Length: 183
Image 1 (cartoon, rainbow, N blue to C red):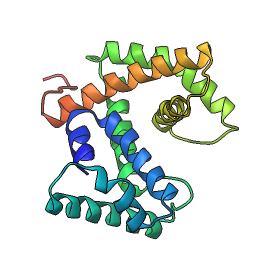
Image 2 (cartoon, rainbow, N blue to C red):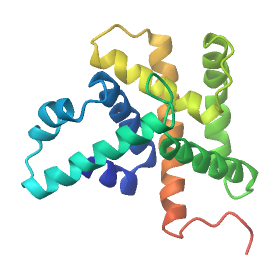
Image 3 (cartoon, rainbow, N blue to C red):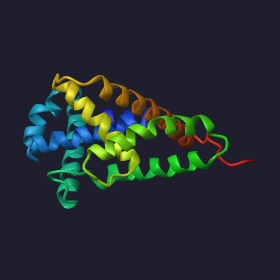
Image 4 (cartoon, one colour):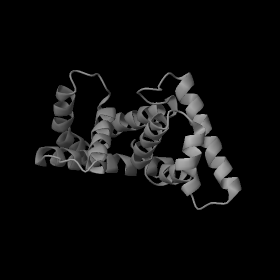
């Protein structure tokens, strides 16, 4: 909860990847709040009232995952809404004549997105979700200390760069600093 709040303010891409990790932690804990309290919340160097708040946050996420039917895979609506918001911004950035650098970054990333979609067996994920899935998959491989090919590394590096730019634009928009239309 503390990390999520901070990441949401600072970097929406990191926030989403963090939230996907939280979903996986909840799954790995078999939706048992006591396991989460013991293995995760107890490690926070926070006063008891803050730990209680964190515990409640996890309980609410567990409830959302159960009620939304994403206990085995998929993402809660809260996280899907982030993808929807980012996709909306992404499309507006592509249409804006003021955002030629963003468009260039996207078109430099597009071959990797197409390649990932082809490898996924035809899964019809939105482009940005494909990007996030690639970065998340890479992070999981690194955490498992598994080997990553040079080709994969190059793709993830480009996708990460693109998502970082999109995150900057999102942050600018949230702060009222992004002007896409001619004034």
